[in-house]
Each structure stands twice: as structure tokens, then as C-alpha cells.
Length: 221
Image (tube, rainbow, N blue to C red; front, side, top):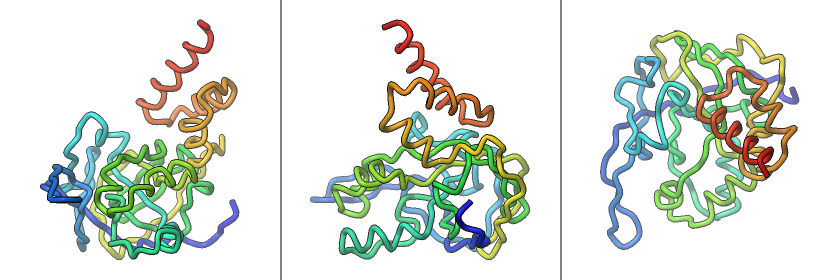
């Protein structure tokens, strides 16, 4: 692991779905516009007071907490010449020293009184573009693999804006979120890479299903 610095929680945000206006007064219902809070209770299904509009593509126990690395904000702001609001990507936790390349699927962290486990990379949606008015940002997140990621909750508890994030256990398979993103977005026919992802028992169920289907297609061709 390149970075031995302790993670620091920069922004803690939750929010329920509401109407968001974008472009020429178009509207969409989304929970991407989250508000900073001082504390919230984290359940297996996510933070109390947090929610998603699109239940098919968001939410569920494997995606209870959304994390985004704080370091990428400076990168995107420089690239697009725009300043980004807090929790731009609809994440609950914006954190330093937890980049996609350094975080492994199955890693376990203490977050305040709760315990969370990394499950999958985030698959960004076009709502991000609409929110910030930058049409290319989602595409760039996919290209770089700087998507952020999701966690399941192993132990419920209160999280505060000044809570510590502490690594409890690194996963022995050492399959990073960045590698997972690369397989998901760029290597649809890489049998070996998909097998190595599937070898991580803690991978999100949806991704397991997705990779299994992909592999089945490869073997029937």
C-alpha cells in the first residue's frame, strides 16, 4: 500500500430524493444533492435520513455507504476549470487517503461506532453530469477508474462528522477497487481478471452475478 497516512473524514452527508433542476429547467428526482450533517445512525440499509430515488440502480445492503476520495476533487476542478460543491458525487463520506488503487474489495473499516466493508466500485450515472453541468465528467470517472466505491455495514452505529475512519483488516486477496473498475468497464472478455474478482467472497452480489453472466457468455461462444 503506497499510502500509510490515516484516512480523514472531510465531508459527511446524507439526503433523501428531491427534485433537482438542471439545464433549461429540466427536472429529475434524485438523492445526489446531499447535505452535510453532524451525525446520523448507520443501519445495514444505509444512514437514517439517507435515500435513493432509483432503487434498481442504487441502494441495497451492498451499497449502504457511498465513499469518494477527496483527492480527486482537486483533479476534476483543475481539469474542468470549475469548483465543485461538497459531496458532488452524492457520496456519504468524502475521505482522504483511501484511493481506489489502495482500497481492496473486502477491506474492513471502523467508521465512528459502525463497521463497514468495501464491496464494489461505483458505476457512475449521468445524474452526476446534470448536477455539475459538466457533460464529460462521468466519462472521465469511468476512464480513470476514479469512481468512488460502496460498502456494506457489518456493525450498525452512530457516525459523526468528526468520526475516525480506521482500517481494521486488509483483505488478503488484495484486489483493489481500481482493478475491479478496470475489469468492469474495460475488460469484458478477460476471463482471468473476472475469475480473480469472483474469487473475492466479499464482492457485492450484483457484481458477482454480472461477472458470472459475462463468463458464461465467453464459454458459450
